[in-house]
Length: 361
Image (cartoon, rainbow, N blue to C red; front, side, top):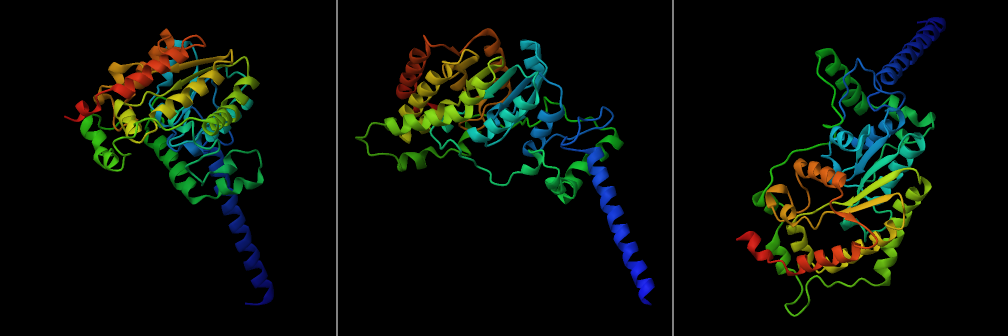
């Protein structure tokens, strides 16, 4: 092959490669399974399943005036039920295993991008109050989807996983006539509930074997200046800074109602008093904001003591998510400046004096 033919062959290969990459990028942009560039097309069926890839796109391009967010404790909320109860047009953006900062970063982006967002439903896991304000469980994030830098979009446009699991899946669903994932279905789950399911992940005997000596007071870990400062930092940086920046948005914030077995473990591990005190500190800060409606459902003893509502010591079934929305709509569990100390003190006494042994007989 002479030099001229070799040069033509090389340029032809380069041109074919460039055309293939351009076609691939175009397919990803048009399909856009994670809504990075545009809102979903009404004629396409999308599979909504990967929260950390999908949620920012929902914030960017979906039409909504209300947002449901939180950890896995909020995944089974149904936006359709919230809309019926509160007169909203809501979407769901939950993050399984999230820390407070991850929720706050996503919420800040959603509020910045959507001036119509006037209602936020936010679950704050009480067991995260004493973690570092920037605690996170996951290190690998698709940060190229979160910003407005077009140059790092190559990680989206030429990503094998996104093409196979996002683009091709959505195209296959569309061509087969399969319906798109609804916002109610998005991130929701169903698991077996009951004592047997709980004991599958809760080894009470092991906790008791490792617990404090018999003469130590269970549930009595201290809550001093260090713990108080940690809660203040966590709530201020991840909640109050956002709440105060958007005074026209109403924030419905709630502490998810873990099961009575959770408080059994907390008492055994000597953290029960500490966690209730952390909730008191958080409540004191949050209730200073006029646009916050704060709820605690730990006082719904008939629910948290019914183990048929739980798949493990913390996670409740979708029926409880529905009940939470109804409680909020009717004002049940609402904490105020006047009652929050009394309510949390009552719950503290209940959990400290409950006959936990009776649960396992």
